[in-house]
Amino acid sequence: MKVALIGTHGVGKTTLCFELAARLKRRDVDVELVREVARRCPLPINRETSTAAQGWILHTQMAWELEAEADHPLVICDRSVLDNYCYLYHAAGPQSGWEPLLAAWLPTYNVLIKVPLWTTPRWDGVRDTDLAFQRDIDALLDEQLQRRGLDVLRLDVEERQRWGDVVMARLEPLVCPQPTLFPDDNTTGSAR
Image (cartoon, rainbow, N blue to C red; front, side, top):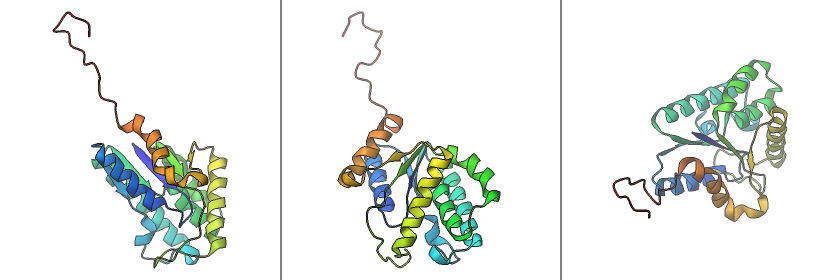
């Protein structure tokens, strides 16, 4: 199973990914986290990105997801190919060559969780802090989600303190099976 937290930069996706992974590990779920790929890109990113940089990011995202899925039943991704594509779209416009791959890859996510724009980005040595750029990416992502008709769990800005609970409520039935309260025991003839 693969879950992706999507959204523009600086909204708390990484923090939420770590919170979810920790909560799931406490439930004995074998979970792997795919960290944000763009931070490892050897080429310029953010507003200075190029088609080459975004191609590297998209291919690496897919490779890391495949690697994580090979060894773990649950993978949580800090971004998806769709939000990475939005940075490419912002830099170079629509990319028809990527469409078949996106159409094939997007269904591999079992759950998409949209983290809303609620704060301004803070400089962390990599993240772009331009507010217009942050809003543009968020708007492009919403447009792409709608255009592609993707099912997405949208987190509510007003319930930031409960985001972990909201996502866990969605994931628990899928990855945390309930223990059997009354095991099937045919060795006794009595009802329990």
